[in-house]
Length: 226
Picture 1 (cartoon, rainbow, N blue to C red):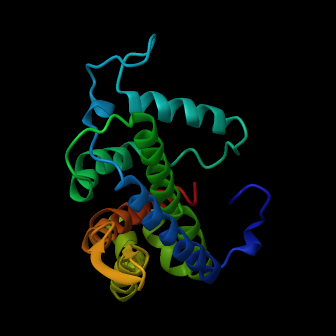
Picture 2: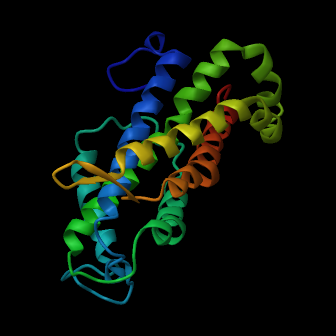
Picture 3: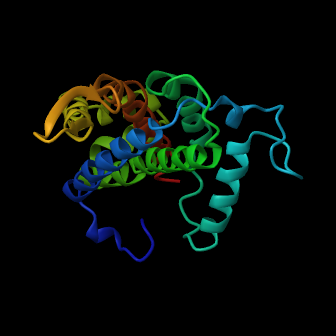
């Protein structure tokens, strides 16, 4: 559980409320990143833009920032970490869907936006550990047999609620519509142009956030009785 918190403070309802708040953060982070073009030089392996560091500039900025943050963060919960999958999804699949091509030279600001997006997505996806723990406590008799059998497929079936998943996808799409409208002019006219295409946000949750969260949940439960 989170540092300074006891397990008794967590319920499925409190976790869901946190996940709903995190949706806002993710949508706003995506909108901030959409302010900048792709700026592909940031991700170029062959451009050594930082003296003494070999690799993409975005790697340097992310590593240095997280190295500082790690000094004040709790060390627990590191045994389940799928940040490499999140990084690959974000850079290679998600970015091209909502960021325009081009290079404006604002590499530091772009990398900072990337970092905010990656951290928000990672936090949301790894919250699956809390979701899995609460679900296990609510119905241990359902989860213990497949956990002991290391049956990941059965655990995935138990964890999947298609009704809730559909509701989440609709909600984040609506948030992207509400938060992402451009309001301009003296009459406060609302443009039909969105900072980030709402369908992209729904797709993000459908194809990546929800499946990766459930992957974390399964990995957590598989080890729950060790």
